[in-house]
Amino acid sequence: MRALVIAPQPFFSPRGTPFSVYYRTLVTAQLGVEIDLLTYGQGQDVTIPGVRIIRIPEFAFLGPVRVGPSLLKLFLDVFLTLRTIGLLLRNRYNFVHAHEESVFWCCLLKPIFRFKLVYDMHSSLPQQLTNFKFTRSKALIGIFGWLERLCLHHAQAVITICPDLRDYALKMGIAPERHVLIENSIFDDVGVAGGESHRHSSALDNGAVESLIRSGGPIIAYAGTFEHYQGLDLLLSAFALVQEERPSARLLMIGGARTQVEEKKRVAGRLGLDDACMFTGQVSKARARELTGQADVLVSPRIEGTNTPLKIYEQLASGKPLVATRIWSHTQVLTDDVCILVEPEPKAMALGILRAIDDGSQLARVAKAKSLYERAYSRPAYEAKVRRLLEILP
Image 1 (cartoon, one colour):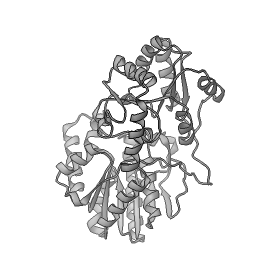
Image 2 (image 1 turned 180 degrees about the vertical axis):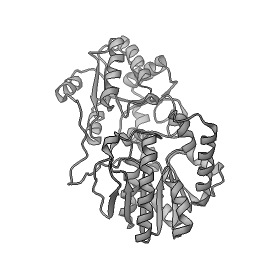
Image 3 (image 1 turned 90 degrees about the horizontal axis):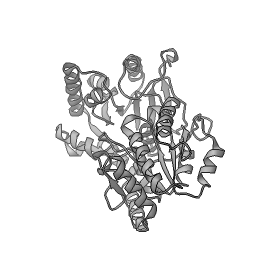
């Protein structure tokens, strides 16, 4: 079986959140599918046996491709469309696996080239236009909504990544037998070309981090992007309250672009947390896992969104107590049995963190969290879902 995978993003680059594409492609190839992966010119080449990565020009002078809709992505997608046509003219694919907006042009090309279409739905595209403040035009949002419904109905299979999107797709009329829920729940190290682990430059002072870890106080760790919806101002305000009760506590903030880190350092400074809060900047997934492995409590302070964060699955499997905000983005997966859920406000989060530090009953929650991960989200569970997808495409 041969497939064309189209990923309209910088593949591979953590800022482009490509992990879902990487793992989906990796597991599909391991199940015997020969894959051509078409993507943007920006990004770092990775090694995936059975996968040929094909890129459009980088256009580096136009700047980096950022998360969410943009005029730059619209420009790059023109070239991605042309390259898609070229590949379809030269090759015979059993199916085309279209991520995000690439499903639009694939849906138009499907009756011409007679391939089976898989729509990998990471989000509702009309909602993205609103969430990222790309446009307020009701007409444009309506056009994207119509295109999305058209693609959902013409795809042979639809993948969603969380229960919220699953419910949305089913509400749009997708037959359950054409739908597969495949959460972004595995987190193997990414192998870049040359066989090395994925690395990313960082302003990380390893000595300072090790000093923080050896300080003797409880360590609370956040790992992820520093976008507004992650609720990091909420976390810092909550940690200031934790400090009043537990002056020895330390907060480790893992991730963030340089400008984002500087902004959050200023927030921490205003709260008097300079000596109690450490920012690492962007690090490799392996280094982030190593650092969170030395923490006493993990946190996910997200304040908005509907998609389940990728890090939640890793946190479930970590063996560490978890404190997360009680919002739909989290509660699709998390319950009070597996973590401490708190209202998204500083005092509630501070009390949740103190409870995680001091309450010995967290061992039961941790055990249930690991059991949930192994049963529903581990690699064997993930592979079973990808097999189900391939069964839909005879």
